[in-house]
Image (cartoon, rainbow, N blue to C red):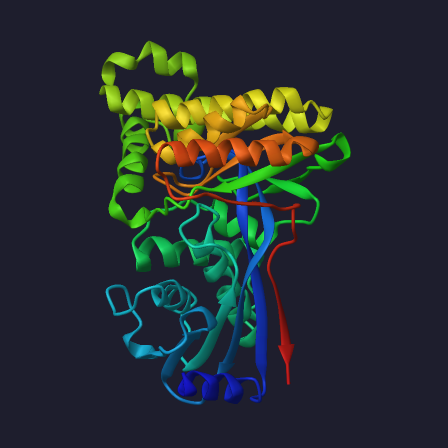
Length: 378
């Protein structure tokens, strides 16, 4: 502990240094389609990961965290390559590797994005480090380039074949809006997301059934979509229509068919959700959230009993719509509810979890927040 405090003190008195931050995210709709070049509609949450970064005039990388006091991870920068040592530190090392940093740095991490809750704590970590390194080393990269670099870190260094959504929204989000992101070219459009003026709130339910996407489930589903695209001679699910899918269903395995059906219908739901938000038709939005959850549960099979229980209990208590968010296999759900029903919805979900002997859920809400930023000191 004393050693970590010493490094923190040393770093905060070293010039120059960068203080950077990046948010977690909630994906309103558009799940498991970013790697299929689809459209997604996430927003940044107020929970953020912070990084303080400075050169240390050596070849050594030192990484520490306020949340993991007592341990300092150290590695020679020349040894930072896929397959090298590290636990959570690999997300940081992957960014160093992806950005081709060749000098030693000290990186100190803190934050409050819940890990394993489906709120993209990994992207918040990657992006806080990426935007900080970009400023410290004067790389001059765009937000799109930083998003690609952070995705490369997670794909090729950590070994999670994630799409581009999480890193993009963490870097590009704007306060008060959801981010309509075209995952093919990373063009964006801010879509005003103001439920409060309609007397509504978006409740985020952390089931505390924490997930890990490195176990192969995520990769298997992505591979199914890529297999369909290859069989049909198209670049991605973005180019597939539901009519073509049905007409050529006999060319696919049953698993490929249902995975593709989710991708095609989910991309369409995103665009319908954008129109619903523009029209302030929150009843229609709620129905789309329900359809998304059903598709993720039945066709993509990435839900779990805790997520289904949270969604079902929220709907039974009067939610306009609810669905799981994130990669699945655990994590969080969202529910669009009347603000005055907040307490009753929470109680309904708690009771449902107790009835099934699940770990008690955690609840929070968040207004759409701004994206990552970095500031140079000294």
